Length: 185
Image 1 (cartoon, rainbow, N blue to C red):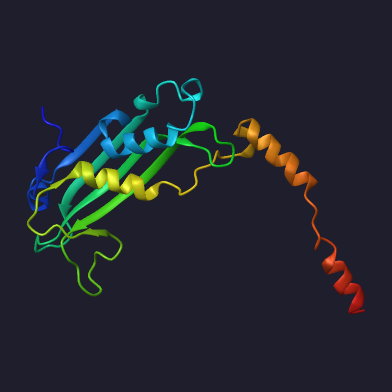
Image 2: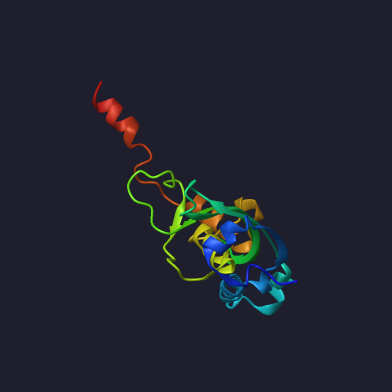
């Protein structure tokens, strides 16, 4: 059985077949996503890394079809759930970030106020595409620029030092509102 994510096909051929695809795999099977995690964790000592970060799950569900009744604009609709190993920018500790990404992509050009305005557009023309590229691009675009743990309480030891530093910070304008109110009386 072939992996349709890896096959290069014309978007129109996928739409004609009304191809539905569900795939569950590991992050190691997605080259760009694997590289992002590996680069993020390269600065971390090996014993502090996520034990099996290359086995983090990636689940993909895609449905191919047509946007219009004239069958001129092929689409892919679905979603991706991916676990990415990233470095928390607050505490510099590795953690697993789960990313849920909806997919709504059309292939070709849509002009004006066509019904595809809520879709992302891939201008592929008559060029075959790999759905793997669409999936990886969607996940990369959904990643935060500065990933952090959901809560500072989940952060490592460095976050504790940040909290201590925040307590010791002087706030020169803390009483300014009260002073202005006193002056305006």
